[in-house]
Image (cartoon, rainbow, N blue to C red; front, side, top):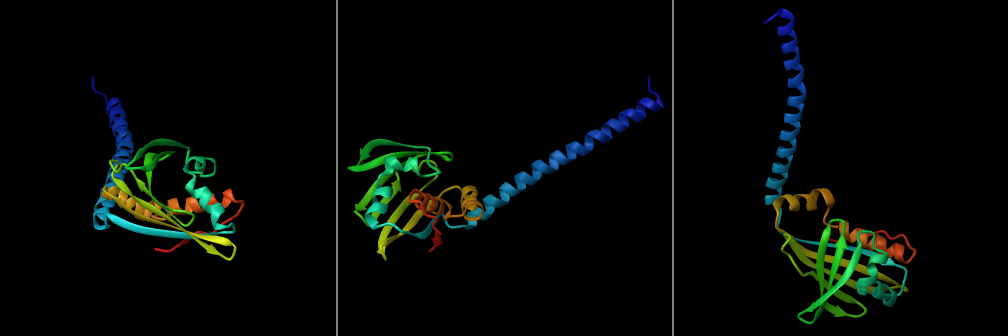
Length: 194
């Protein structure tokens, strides 16, 4: 049986339900729209990129070389690295599995010229990204200037957008150089080169 009070309560309940539902719908639509916009903008960005960052460490080249070339011990001083595991060689090159909060990926050391040059490549690009990190060490007034150059690619337009505008292409290099400085008891100031 319909009564004016029951009709009023039903109408009031319907109004109360509309506002939260509207907010939830708007929130979901805004998040979807932002993701779609990021993917569209990512399509406009180049798939390949180059980023280089340098820092000066107040240690001789030999000491800095030992820290960067000893992949297994890096987990002890790198804040982004949770563990390292040696994998079988690939084409005569050593391969290391790096375990991080962002995932695990194998790195193959493809070029070495102690104590001034090391190139590591992502050994499995099936996750949609890859490339190389080149470490260049140069003696500098009793210290060492280290430059890390990343030559990479990102397949996903959405992740490409995030790498360029949210995380930054230099972020991993800056973290590595800060951690390397702390490993030697120093505070370093990474400088973007490219």
